[in-house]
Length: 135
Image (cartoon, rainbow, N blue to C red; front, side):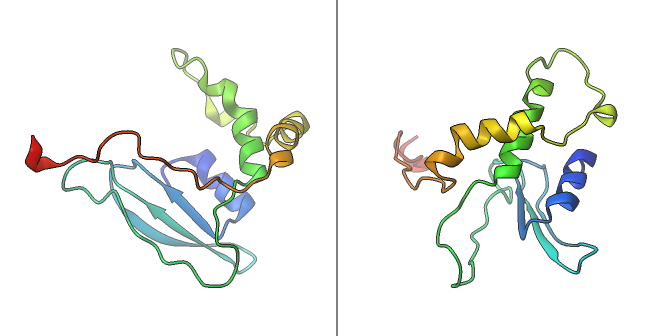
């Protein structure tokens, strides 16, 4: 994955799918876990001309028909947010504890879970689509 904290997280939460973008190369992998489950991993390239930065996926017919946030991931990002606030300092990630605190879980429950974990389907066109013929 290119990131030790990312790999530790993937092994801890064992999601069915893991998507990463802007990794400078496109690749897919099946990541096996000790309990026999698999994570389908997909990394996409940078969003540049003639690069493989987009992929359309078909999901199984069964199950929810929407994307949802993951409470544990939200708690982790809340907990680790201070590590990324001051990018002028080098951070030694090998000594950092990425496990979310109870305060982080409480914050997620108060701010996010109470309104729902479903990602809203409210995308709106904000600028006209690029048309290379009109340039």
